[in-house]
Amino acid sequence: MSDPASFFDDAAAGYDRAFEDPGPGGHALRTRQAAVLRLLGDEPPGSAVDAGMGPGRLVSALADRGWTVSGVDLSPGMVDAARARVSLAADRLLVGSIEELPFADAVFDLALATGVVEYVDARRAVAELVRVTKPGGRIIASIPNPRAPYGLWRRHVVHRATRALGRGETGLAHQREPLTPAGFAALLREAGLVLDGAERVNAQLAFSPLDAVAPRAATALARRLEHRGGRMARVAATQVVLAARTPPAPEALVFPVRLDAAPTVELGGRTWHRRPEFHVTTFTPETLAAASGVPATALAAAGAALRPELTTPRPFRFDGRVACARDDGGRETLVAFCDVEGLDEVYERLSSRAGAAIPPPPTHVTLYTAEPGMQGIGLATAAEVRDKTEPLAAQDAVAVLSGVRSPG
Image 1 (spheres, one colour):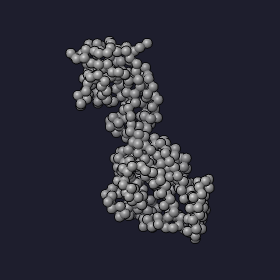
Image 2 (cartoon, rainbow, N blue to C red):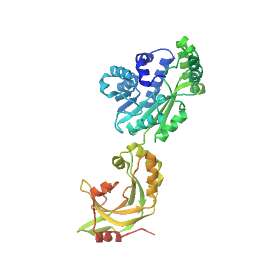
Image 3 (cartoon, one colour):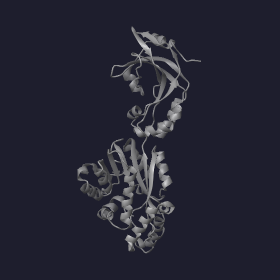
Image 4 (tube, rainbow, N blue to C red):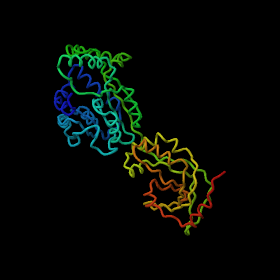
């Protein structure tokens, strides 16, 4: 078997021409691209990347729709063809692997991968697509349908006969255990994605060598099956295209706290005003992502999986520390730090899901604000506590906490 870069380098010119071929090969490429564009729908144009872009047919179609396009392919020959087709984006069309995309985290509104996942480590490829996609962005990817009769015939009859006749291996190696549509959907969900569309395309029933002997008739049969739809078209489809969305922009998670507190407290010659409601913030993914280096999308997915544990009220107790918090805008609040029962164990599970050690936040309750109705000030990490707070003297801390009670 050839290595992917060499195989597609040798095939670049023919692969590009195949898109226009009236036979089954061209029909497969065209129907797959059409399915991607249908699943994309009327998504407003933004930034897009095609991982495994080949000669740039899909990149070109997106550029025509107003998208700012980037792309990678392992084959320099394919990249050259893509740059020639979409010259205005040439500096964003790069040689590279879907398993290690040369882009920063969360920079694309749309990530595509067609005709590539079956040749690589699918889990790594999906992780990279998720990494470079913005929160709330789209990911559309395809795999061959390993149970399609046409594919089974080629894999178990044509390829074996070719080897038996001493003509060597046939093309590029696929995965040893081909992904099924259900398995690929499960892989996307495990990565934190929400599936929002699927299509099966290229209902091919003209087996080799009939597809080569009568290519137009084979394509006409496929079109007829696809037009009629139904179970036969689904079974015969050689390609499955799935669409999914990354989790929305990460949100802070809190649990509510019931406290009785004096309406105001006098401290340092000033009047501080009680917050209208109290809570403990348990999860602030954007801040934690910046502090830990873990992609915000991975943290958002981990937090979503553990949302019940992070938002259900837990027993807590104040540890005696009270501080004045100040932000860059000059807002000031009085916060009381606390210990929350069981939160360390939740963060152990969260760290396991995120793939990195994520320390629990310095849990606290914002009790009073310098002005009525003010919001709290984010203190999600030890560094933020160090930079944004000034501890109160012990007697002042006691004075603040003496007026705070838990009802019942």
